[in-house]
Length: 391
Image 1 (tube, rainbow, N blue to C red):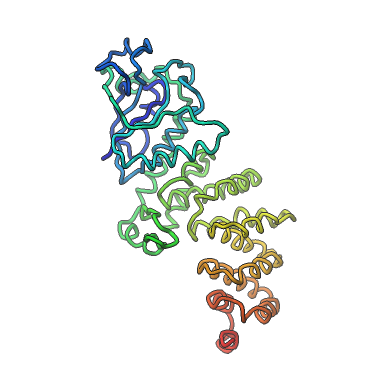
Image 2: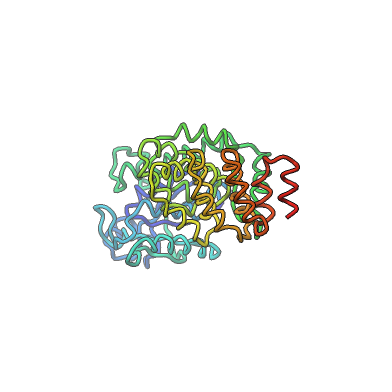
């Protein structure tokens, strides 16, 4: 168990919000980082003690990471508002993140910088070591549990976000498999220096993840964003499967969301199970395909793979030009996953127009990486495969 301290305005609402998050095991409200020992609420209310209303959060770091907790916290505050949240004004209502374990600093500052980069001005959120924390009076503890109709500065949608997130991840945990939990990290290459380095798995197979996504298909875009930022691989996959359902109803909005949240699409299955059915399907209906070449020109390999794999839907509709152009662009790629993806798309063309594929291979067989070539000719006869591999 670990602890972190959040000041988010009135501590009644912040405690209730943080306490509803899966992985949080205990909360306690109190007064932090002031200059008066063991203050009363009446003293803190004067704004003369230097204390902030604060929530001590004890969490199970095997269930939820500190970065995820911090991101959820930032969603409960206006990070640009100085000494004010909602209708509450005063230095006691300032916002902040305080730690007692110095090793937490790096992760907190990474999230802080990530949030700050979305704004054109500095955040008005304190961050630093906890200097002092004094528990508040008993009647303040779990105030909104004791007083369900009590005052809360947080919106209903904000409170719902934490509850919906927790419900979804609990649904995923309910169908997790201990054996898969140990196998999947190796399958998706999560070791140091490997393409999936650091990725974490709950142990949920894709069919079960699809069932959870279907049950939560009405999830908000805000929840989808939270899931895409999750340390858990299955949460990110679930987010993308929900987004596919969103695409069916509001395609333009879903595509825009997809393209502006690519960071969480960072393993091959996340790409392959989403790109054709969101971006690819969209491009079938739109003549401007520049986005494919922008993605292909990215320095991020996963974005390059999104470009190539998205053309699967174009291929299925008899549109081969973009696949051919991208395949030529990636003839010199050194990424094994890009060689496989490109060869896969070429093979898909060959299923429909073998002459076109053969012509491409004749032009480029001496330059193609062996993995790309092998994937491209997988459906050829043994004699044909031998002719092209003996280049």
